Length: 331
Image 1 (tube, helix red, strand yellow):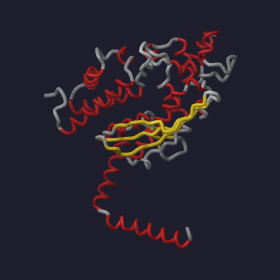
Image 2 (cartoon, one colour):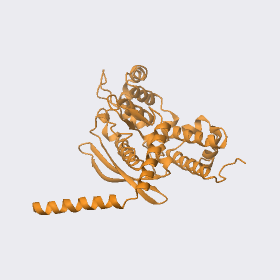
Image 3 (cartoon, one colour):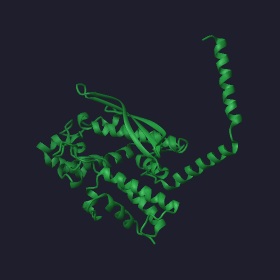
């Protein structure tokens, strides 16, 4: 394309932009901008520092975390779907990489999408057996896609950032919240007489050292992993890599973050109905989980699928209350 042609294209583009501005409804635009501003203020007020978002020292914007993204999606009444768009699974070299697309929709209409990538060469996975953390890496890509889409749909890029790479404390907390028996057993020790071995390997030859790690390790996630290898909890055993009798993967348990989300939305509903938050929670969970009693054992066995269903039902109940529909037992 000649220099003259380039200039002509630039002029045409400028004219098109001016035309869009000239034909725009300024009052409508102002109202939309005000709505965005109001929503941003509501989000900042209702999200919890340290759980839903966190601040990297030296930066001026907080980082949106997975629980915060889930709350925002619930507030906006959107559903999310995920698709692995690209993947590298090199079993010979031990390298795995995934790119995931998150699509947000409402009422069957696509609103926006986001992309997220993760791979086994990232710093956070340096001391782990890559063949044991493939699913963890895939979940990380999914989480990044979810946050990317959420920042877009809620116009929150000027409020939050997605720069999570240096947030060691928050990354460690997420590893602990989502740690399964397999993750714990595959964790490598980087010091001492068992340097380079996984906790699963150490358990076979020196359980006393695992006991020492569970009490004295400087890293909280290593302490937790050692304790899990020594004494696997009932809640964690559901998350094993083993298949069930039908050959299907064992169900994943709900994370603590998802449980916190259920409790949080129950409190919001309770504020509107006058019921106790625990009553709201147990009533909805009783519809989802057969034989639900609200005991510790019930929470320990709550699956990710049932937790997601519960969150959706709580969202429906919240929306029904806001629109005045008789969706509760209150008279």
